[in-house]
Image (cartoon, rainbow, N blue to C red):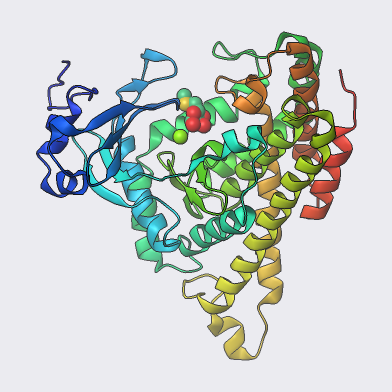
Length: 419
Ligand code: SR1
Ligand code: MG
């Protein structure tokens, strides 16, 4: 077994029982003795080991960071401290939107591992969208989560000294921000070594990479991502970071957490629903595509409406931070609606820019998504991806004013034959 100088050792199915057996609270939760436990490694993400440990009394998840990017291998080292940031992000998200993230049972910074709640019978949302499943209340739950974490982690709500200290803590998540800065904002727009794309897309990719006006806008968005520390974000809020049953929605995996612009999580999430929307002709029978696409667009509408309603509610009931204080508005008999509407418009505009960029990087950069990647007919995949790339560009250059305009644009783009 590989053991590092400070005692870190990556776990395996064989060693995990002994490790957890020494943690009385965790061992009690699983029940029996480690020799009775069933341990499976189930990690299918890009970065970490994930184990399911099942015993007579219960089941837990053990997530452990590896000292490198799992997707690529040890040629791309990545610090273990991302487990520390995930742990701290989960504690803050649990406080800001209770019940939405997995409960933590144990955290070990040296081993870079988190023992947490096993969500069952939840499955990853991306898989559900490919399979054509429905989730009741999905958009509402996600919209509230994004609004609550955005508002309650910002200077609209927190004492500014607390927020600044927290922002300083999360500034240490440099390497994961660096991944996003490279893979999301930069690599899609040039021939970067780690990129790959469906070969038939070549003419669309060439046109995109030649669009200087768009690249300028993308760099403006990168500047906002890197410098506009408004709130603690999840940082990687795609449909692979959401687990659902038919009626319950939970958010997982905030290891990319950092303080950034409020529109980032919202835009990433919408982008992933839009990519699910555009990929549907490859996953449904022809007669079923329209109904399911309509449902996905409805989820986007619900998500945006819930975000807006919850943000407005928190503005009215929890605006205790230094920004837009009641002393300047309500206490003087002045409404703060104009300020609120302006803030929401800025968040929306940013979200649309981030959304377009995410729609590009999942097709052009290193980390693709199964919505498109699982389409084996590359000609069909390219035609569907081309719509997503085109809509991404439109969003970056010409931000829709509201969710209804966004949804109408998605429908219109779906009818275009770009390739
Ligand atoms: C090298 S990590 C690639 C991607 O996986 C994560 O989930 C993030 O989305 C990241 O961009
Ligand atoms: Mg992840």
